[in-house]
Amino acid sequence: MAISKEKLVFDIRLATVVPGKISGENKTYELKGIDLAMKMHHLKGLYFFTNAKIGIEEIKSEPMYDWLVSYFMACGRVRASSDETGNRASIKLNDAGIRMVEARSNKTVEGWLAMEDFLSLQDCLVYNHDIGPELAFSPLVCLQVTWFKCGGISMGLSWAHILGDAFSASEFMNMWSQYMQGHHKQPKTLAQQNPSKPIYPPLNPSQEPVSLKRIDPVGNHWVNPTKCKIGTHSFHVTPKQLAQLHLRVYGSNKNEIDTSKGFEVITSILWRSIAKIREDLDTKVVTICRPKRIKRKQGVPYNGQVIGTVEVGFSVSSVDPLKLVQLIVENVLDESNIVEELVNKEMSTSDYVVYGANLTFVDMEEVDVYGFEIQGNRPTFASYTIDGIEDKGAILVLPGPKDGDNTNGGKLIVLLLPENEIVSLKNELKEEWYIT
Image (tube, rainbow, N blue to C red):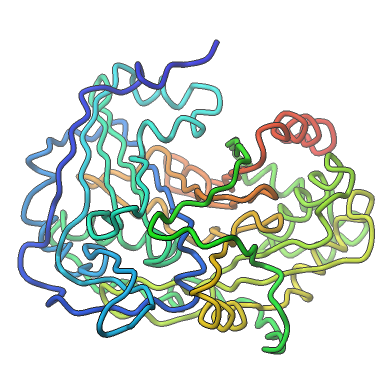
């Protein structure tokens, strides 16, 4: 039986929260080409706490105001043009603030998490906001706190991707924890957060990036006009299950198993499985989004991900998944620079979509989604999704829920695919890989 979203949350209230003092100084931040390539997308973070007892007065208090001073860029508003940047979109650092949403639910946190495909209902807990059509009045960040029965809460983040990648969004929330606890520190750099990644060969600037889908200009309403209905499904792969998947993928080459290649193994399995249900249509080129090492200044988020592609000339549905692992490790072509160049060149005539332009795999393994704490408590469950997805779909690989002793929680896999593919893929993963 379908669940009525209107009955799940109620007593919704909206407000605006601004920095505690003048911080952006009304300057203008010019959006880079890589930022504008992400203009159709929002990152959606969702954190559940079963034992946090905190009121709105404690949330909307001095630590929040001070936190927003550090993140003044997130408090700005988009301008389609300006004296400083001409016809190039920018963010006016005018301290206009973030949107704050309060809501209530008659469910418990445990009851919500027990619902089938509860992430498909995240719009109840993460405020769904567009950028535009009135750009000057559209916040770039929305926070929604929802109070559940028996003391639990959820915190939902809607983060305009033009501000920065998943590491930026997660660090934004984690820094708020530091301010609430009274011992904030400078945000980590990506180099500190992540182990070294392969250095992918850049493409020749004369080549057209295949990681982007060109769409007609959307004007001042930054929403992907796709008619494809994207469904959401998630599943948890425990450390034991992940070890078994490594064994199956590597087979007779088990001496070569590299347990740090969790993303590659999961991607190879899902790539092959999706190719099978699609009968190899639209699966010979995939986009791989991964972090790269970039130092960040305090309070300055950044789109620092590699946008890469892998292209094959064979039937993916029948290939040895280990071959796909090797391709993902060795054959990703980094298109980030030519994406930047193309968007800079054609921003006045075209807009673009990244996620779902090809089947897209997003590596969020090292995003510290469990670093956001309330009253010293880590989330019972945390996840991220992306909206504005095109019809080829996207797969996100995140850290799984931590055990009670805060040990390795495996991986959380989030599927963002056309609705009519979800059931077929679930069946394929269950029958072929025993993943449920």
